[in-house]
Image (cartoon, rainbow, N blue to C red; front, side):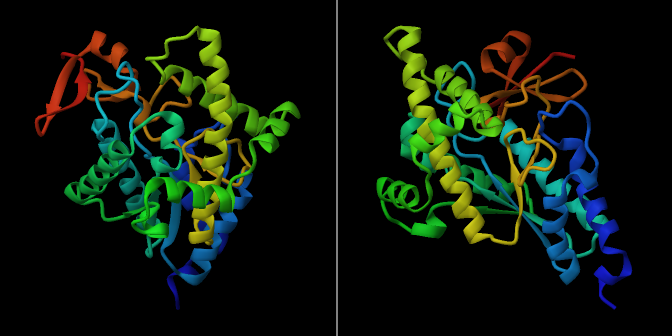
Length: 310
């Protein structure tokens, strides 16, 4: 008898999803139950019915913010290390209740929108290379990586961007129409990305109103390419359970997942710095705030995070 047959399928799916629910990144006011997420239950069922390892995809970990007031540099640091360890541990916990276990594919590609967020391609390459090295050093055996090299090989970055955009991206006009029509998810994403772009353009020489207009324009391009990347990932991993680093309501086709604690529902390790409290707890916040509260800690000779003195 297969492992999947030893428990009812519903109980397996609900128990697996139950491990994710405490980390649900959402805009909902109240906590949800497994039954509030039929799309994810159905995706998990594809694997449990076959007794196969559950595969999750997580678009994210693109590159560090170019704003030095937010981050310590352009390479992964304590925020990424703790987040990757959390994801690996989550898969291990799934393996404790479902023997075939789980894997998460980190679908990282800052190259998709690197030119729009003003991050040089060499910095994105260095970030991705160090992310893979970090997974190896930490022996995170439940994590895989996926990026444009897996799709378009060694073509230059501009060509890769053009190929993905042409094949998958919605038009900026279509996105503007969704925002004007009040589509909740698109409006929330548009506002969040506009804010990030505004914060991440510290060297702009014009007025704040001019910068705001420019960031609104670029935001549509970032959303279009982000959706293109998501659709490409879905085509390459059609059966996977789809995770997101963006807040998602219960019932959405993607499950929003929180990597580390933060007062900001949109905070990610690549837009912030880690501050460790006196008890060891880790919080994400902007670098300028973290360095007011703690001292800088180095890891392997590089700035890693800040720490509050005990």
